Length: 97
Image (cartoon, rainbow, N blue to C red; front, side, top):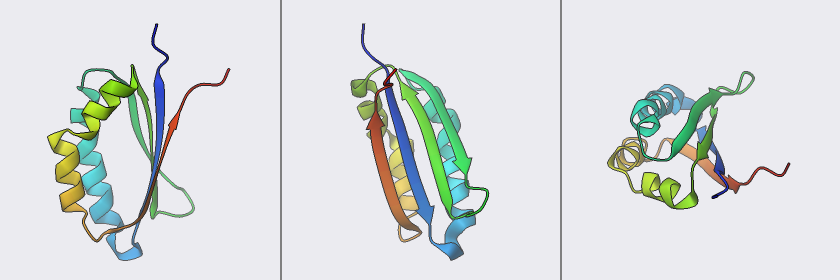
């Protein structure tokens, strides 16, 4: 049995671009949840720093997550937020216990 893959993606919007980035991130939720292999895809916004967003994701396998990364709605997000994101960090993780 394949061990599920957990993704923690941290997106920091430029201070003057928070609403733009948030709107584009929200657009990703429903189509991604419909993708093969998506077990969980939840967006969070930091309570103390509204420029910081985190996606917490669980995927059946790394291969299916990689297919998600090539999806058209993700490419549309990248194009729509060009110049609006200050930083992006992605961690591929496996449950330790």
